[in-house]
Amino acid sequence: MHKITQSYILKVLKEVRVKSKIASKQLPKIEDVVYDDNNNILYIIVSDRPDRSALIGYGGLIIKEIGRKINVNEISVIAKTDLLVKRKRISESIMKAKAIMRRRNIPQDIKEFLEILIEQLKLEKKFPPRTVIREEKAKNIKILVAYSGGVDSTATLVLLKNMGFNVKAVTVDPGPFILPNWVRDNIAKAVKLLSVEHEFIKPIVDFHEIIEYAKEGTHTPCSLCYPALVNSIFTYAVENMFSIVAFGNLISTSKYSLDFPLREKFLLRINLPGAFALTKHDTKLLSKGIVNWKPLYGCPLLRNSMKNHRWMRYIAIERILREVRAGILEPMDGLRYIKSILKLVGK
Image 1 (cartoon, rainbow, N blue to C red):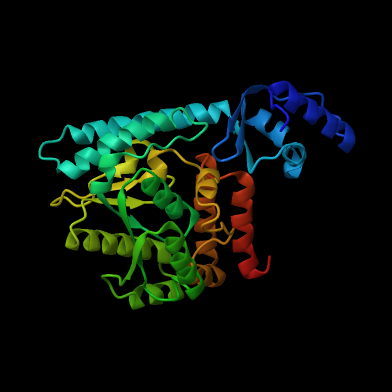
Image 2 (image 1 turned 45 degrees about the vertical axis):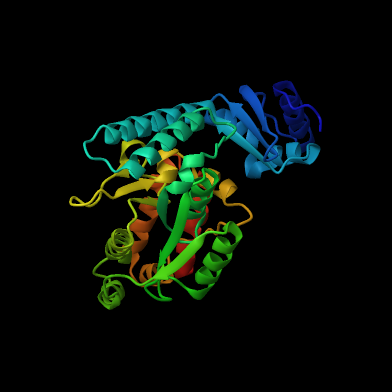
């Protein structure tokens, strides 16, 4: 492999611009180049988002050309400004974890989990590259993972397993209108690849009413479905003596990534990707080879509801834009999601 430096990348950039007849004279400011030899990933740190766009090029032209000249699994271009936001969010997660540890009568397994979590969060602040250290005492700590089969919850499983925790994945199965058979098959394959114990469980509520509301267009299915799914996970956790439940939520970052959802129980909920301030790009990389990301927004019930009720499409698109605004979802991936919604009505 050619030694990758800032000057080499700029040299390739100039060559590509000449070849493609791109007239721009502005060169991106490259702060650093980091090569992760464990995962064969090249990280290019640029100053700001405009530098990132200039380096990636329209349709990824420049990065693809750099990729042709070197032999790496992945090239990731990261803006320094985004890294600063990430580190701030992680600092807030650490502060919240420490605050929880100061509470009285915290169960020992939760305390030990938070101790390990804080150490891993400190390592994540140094990203890139990503470093996960396996803790010996983690094997005695049970964690229940709410598993949907998507890249975010898969990344959650991967991280917790790599950290050495005793994890079990559970998937709430209300039926094929929310969990189609192809998703069930993908889940079964993923947990087998990860050698993780897994169980499909039934929801604690009857979903027929939720389906009828969705058909009539009086409620978005997610507003009723998500709380039912989450409460089903919590009920299972309490009944099966789990003190910690992990979810794959990305947008609940900083202090919002950790809480005790049940007043009468010491049940800790952690949105692990949120605590680590991961992006969709990060979860795609972590789950690569296990599950594939698909730009398909929503389950069959939601997609059917959006097809028949225009106002639901606007809510879904607003949610996508919120993730783009938060820096969690790249604009191009957000556009792909929006296109999947527009295709429902043939537009």
